Length: 323
Image 1 (cartoon, rainbow, N blue to C red):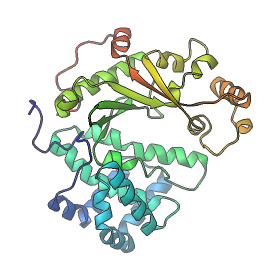
Image 2 (spheres, rainbow, N blue to C red; image 1 turned 60 degrees about the vertical axis):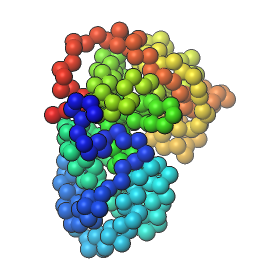
Image 3 (tube, rainbow, N blue to C red; image 1 turned 135 degrees about the vertical axis):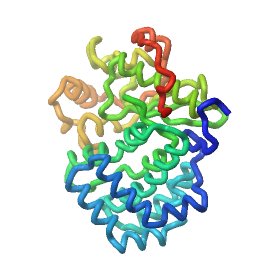
């Protein structure tokens, strides 16, 4: 075991995390609900949503359903397919189109994940930054309309199982198997400038060496609409997107309408109805209305290129999440 690692080793464990019997008892007790109340306040949800969440967490009906669905709740921490099957059962049982109930339930689960972070010695600010995904997507959803409040429940199990952490600008997901790698995810509030990007990658490498040493030296991969090759032809050389692409070797693409979520706030919008407020929006609209197709690009981060472009002083040995 590498110096700095702890015996629990929950963070970055590929294939999900299985709560122990003691952890399951804690999760299904009133303690997780109380912890979720505090988490709602710490994560700074919009006031309207925070009030709904607090009301649900105080509800006897919610507590009853939470306990009755114990098996499915525990399986949310498991491998991807198992977690998604459990999520489907929970959504059916909760029957709440607004998404508020599943959000409250997942925040109760996130309270257990917080205990895992602490057991592994990962700083609480990294935990809060990672779980900041929840209020970010609530705000993103509210910009599109009053309902649903939360419609990204399928992503949450990856956070709950501690396979993803946010380190400064980016989220990093730890993927095992025959060809292990680190998957880079781009939050909507990330700063795509070389300096902050390089700092985030340095933090990731230090974090991996300390907490997930089995992934030392593994490539960092990214799947994003920002890496779709055609975007480079639509934007000027000075654009941040083109500069971002230069730090990757792009080796794949998938056609999709995912890009609409990020430039229009919703995917169910026609090409001619795409917004035209920014130069990016205008360029994309012109391109797709003219018959062009966009989607998701896949690529490997060229770290030497990025780090050479953004030299930073040597990191303190505690950086990367250790206390």
